[in-house]
Length: 332
Image (cartoon, rainbow, N blue to C red):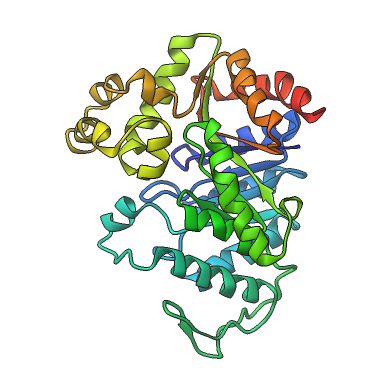
């Protein structure tokens, strides 16, 4: 069983260093940081974390081939792997269309663009020439790293749609499927398995993380408030497939989007988040968290990935998960 922490890139850099050290001490295996637009740079954050830790793996969740060229992604990956002495995992996907369009970029061929980037990055970090004549990536024979990558950096593919979930099984070393709600795991697994079958691989060949949001606190209301704020920010950008699993639609989030992103009224947006929307993640006590994870462990989940906001006191949440959750499920 593996355990990982995921964070958005919206905190001061020093906070990540502190949380990563606490996660390493608490027994977590991986520490992931997102690279959402207009927030802090994940590669810089992860560099600081790499220098402050010794054992825990670090990763980006996610970089995308629209805002960062695959050549630069490969440079980041190989350099961070060097800095961390072989502890870096590259999380990559196409990114959310709404956010990519903020930059006026053409969001065409998201799956093809991502898979062509993965193939090229694998070649580059394997110290091979990545010349390509693909649909979205056309490189000359000059496409190779001018320094030696210590290894082919493992690639974790972020996914929500059926085709991207299949691509996890067919093309990636690991998967970061977002589960909103966490109980969505049995629905995503068949798609991943179809990809594995095409590649002639088994599920044991893949590190498939069950990625969910959780907000943990002895105070139920406080835990729900923190999760509601996260849902208010991201809810409108979630895929229709994920929202449908929670009995929701994008239209349900339009008043929230207007309040948060247009009017800038976070309090109003947060108050519009309904109990049904809160079921997208897990909010409550450590017992609440453990209870909802029991069902996932019983169907074979072997990697729990705890995502933001984690709670009103993140340090206490990390400590509680390390004390009351990791030992419990590590023995499964």
